[in-house]
Amino acid sequence: MSTVVRRLLDLTVEEHTLTVPLVWSDPSDGRTIEVFARVVTRDGGDALPYLVFLQGGPGHEAPRPFHSSTAPAWLDEALAHYRVVMLDQRGTGLSSPVGDADLERGASAVAEHLTHLRADAIVRDCEAVRAHLGTTTWSVLGQSFGGFTTLSYLSTDAASLDDVFITGGLSTVTRSADEVYALCYDKMRIASEKYYRRFPEHRDTMRRLVDLADAGRITLPDGEVVSASRLRSVGSALGTNDGWQTVWSLLERDPGSNAFRYDLMHAMPFDGRNPLYYAFHESSYASGQATRWSAERTEPADFADDVTLFTGEHIRREWTETVPAFQPWREVALELAEHEWPSIYDAEAITASAATGAAAVYVNDVYVPMEFSLETAQLLPGVELWVTSEHEHNGLRSGPVLSRLIDLAHGRRIR
Image 1 (cartoon, rainbow, N blue to C red):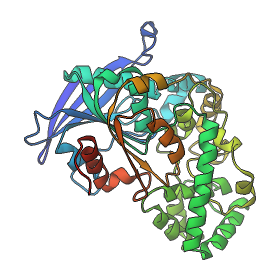
Image 2: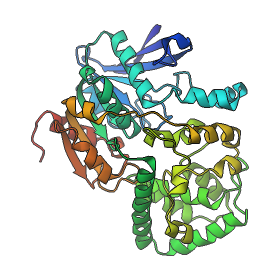
Image 3: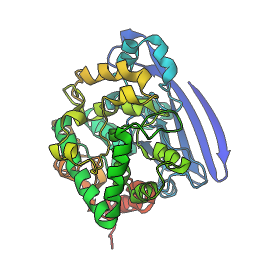
Image 4: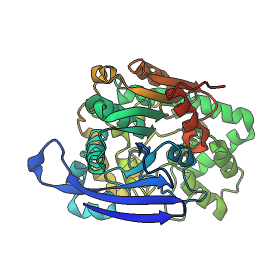
């Protein structure tokens, strides 16, 4: 293990790298990976308790603690109460990242490796980092998939947690991936119709664009010939606070222009920078079953009939053939789709955890449906619930969400 200390203006940043087992459940396996975490402390905060931040994903690294427009808006609020641990989840960032170079080992070897990157293994990594820092307990902030990981944490190691803060991440712990993706289509139908009520002229625009895509006439700068299903995935942006602006500005452009081609490339939620997010995505909702391209199988008939309906985090098997960045990952993705994932949550243990804290549930969440979040909330009576339509799934990035949750958890009056 190693530690490096840096100064960034009024912040002290300790960088910790630990070597941990790849397969926590089998110490005899012998393989190891590195796990990287930054501990961020504001001047005068050396005695504050720890808060570990678990990023959304799966497959995304923690944000960097820079004083800039790219810094997470919630960080200032967090640093007023905690020393913040920003963990690069295994396989991301500086934690033995997974990338195209790994494919040289063969698809089956990579697929097997990825089966050890789930939330339960991330919890074990967290416990190793916590022990390394010498603290008996800490609090956790889980955004989206980070909330899923927090529920896994409560299933196995609740004694290590003080308060839990979850934003857009109260996943179902009992339902199948099929049930989740089917409900997410319903959410995207509502989001699509809401968008077209605001910009009715864009419905015809989408029809024309889908026709162009079906004719193979939309090509991105990286050479991808955009399929209709890829084009429709730009609707994922509608699940964020200002995402409608992304869709609006894209559909206002001339589809033959460079600006349209580049904007489309950046508007689609899955890309080559992070193939793990695509290849590994549906596993985040798998607990005791194989996914077998769940989002593809559960597509409602009206989505097949009405090409103007946007999709969200619904991945497609065809992208392994049509997206240049995903073509090398085809065999990995196909193997993972057939993998029988073990159960990752224990509802009884979550209830017995007597967890305290607060959680934000977003009424219009198109990624983590409110209905299933409220079911899970019943297992956590000590976690104060804030159900709101003020924000979409990325509300944490707006800043005030975390302060609201901290006030709720600490019993302060909310006006």
